Image (tube, rainbow, N blue to C red; front, side, top):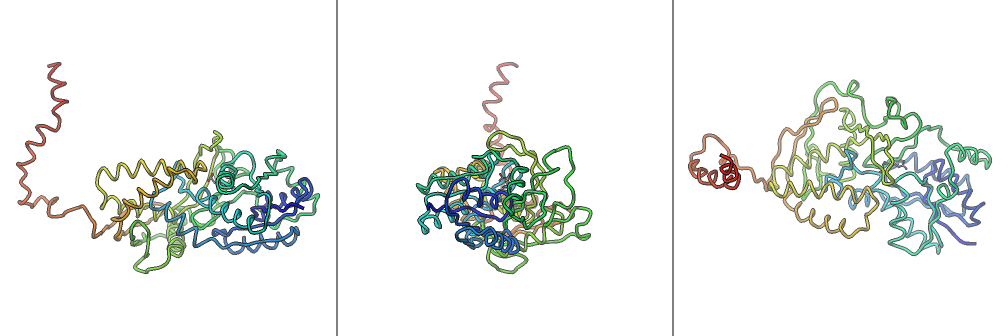
Length: 391
Ligand code: ARG
């Protein structure tokens, strides 16, 4: 019998997929859960679920460090946000897909399956990587059978699949962010209920005194928080905690999905908002005017590519290289003030600072102010000539 590796989370879609694959596609199912920081409880649940459903074999792959160092680090250097959403799910999908490909090759499987519906972006992200990086077939049971959530629930009940969660929302979580979709959130006319949030306090419940946080960067990557050097993954955890307590990182947006649908999306991204804001504050100090303009342009382009499932696009690699080159001078320390959902830079220092206190101060005698006169005369030369035509 043909073997198929299923990207498995233990939720409704992928649990139903195990049975559908066996029954309707007549294959042996290997379930694989790639840990990008869904939380130990979720990983354990997925393992328990895999055992209960009784596929052929189950894998759990710990990819948390790799996700932090190879993917989130790029997201920070690029300030990668799509319409105000610091890319989290979108950044993790290419890594998950690659890990599943590795297992499929090792197991001699003929295909990879996923539980994505035909409406979202994740189907594009998984399949783009599988098509580019392997010759494996792709099976998308939920999409191919055009199933609704209610039909999936009925099928699960019929097959005796006991879902080990009573969650009504579709939640995707990794160390960089948490996305909450579905149920009453689908209608933008509804307020998001407080219960959907797990990482962030509301502004009302946030800490009552402002908090200062210092972040140290080396070549664009955070290396210490509040003076303590630690691996990026731990800095992210700490940043999530501090920013979350201060009510930072709730995003509620009408997102433009790849297939054109507008979708109400809610996110919790406290650490991402803090680290990206600190990174931008440092860039302002060390990059030139033109570098900053270009960085902003690259950031939008980069986020669009990653959001739109084009991780394999050479332009993504080209931009990464340009960004890395620019980030060689993005080293130094920034202090941020966090208070009830607001975030602002307090201090910035860097050995590569292009700011000069000697030059900017009003007490300066060295910079001869008179020299600027000539520059002004010629600066608007063409505009002045144009206006003269009408005078
Ligand atoms: N809208 C976000 C994105 O496209 C989050 C998707 C969350 N995925 C999910 N399967 N719940 O990146």
